[in-house]
Length: 308
Image (cartoon, rainbow, N blue to C red; front, side, top):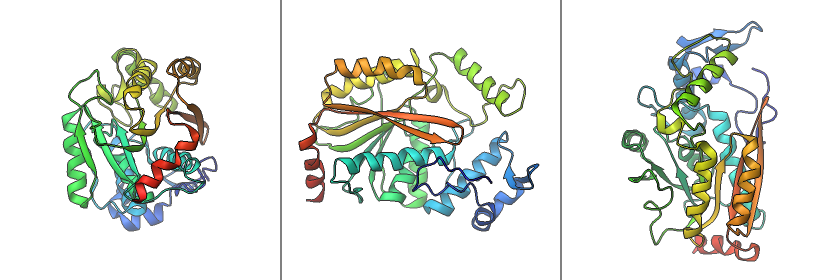
């Protein structure tokens, strides 16, 4: 596969997929391997089972996850891009920790909308040893995440969000302190818009009209009223209540046009600092916004406390 030079320097998938290594670790992937016009081994990314098997092989080969599966029709995320978010978060935390990436279970991360795949906690605990708390509004997603933890003997905290209007409320407890929160928000504003997005994805993959998503996804994973701008605005508003319990709040932003209104929302919230961190993956550019209420000279104290 062609080198994915735009991925983060520490991303283990920068060189593309090593199918010989992946098949050696997960022989069942061989049944889905095909040869592209350039003579390279790959899979059919329009095949839901093939993508799921590729993810299983990647998580086993690179992140020591011996069991991984998700319920039918749930979001099956492309691993390399998810890995990038984790590595860029590590760089963000290093900026508040004397340029040293903090490692170990004393570093606490809150994953909002962790999903049935539990993909961010699996990668983050493998790469940096961080302790994750995964939150989701979907009880089936939480059950799937629990099964992944049980089979792999992982200590990841999972919490069910009971109130659809809440993001941090009800899941951040009074004694909690997090170094960073992360989120891949639902980016469509309606089921109709999500369906149109699906058709565009299939068209880009060279396939015509289809009712299926190539990576799956439940309604709560794909859309919410007002789309991602409304979701992140609510996140900012609710973050004020937990300003002293979280060092950095972050969220992916899929639409570049949303950055300007989000900047105004963050200025209104009187945060101490906010930044937009660009992540480039091949021809696609993604990004996340990060904000904190903690003054710069106080930020290292979060890590001093974590060491005690």
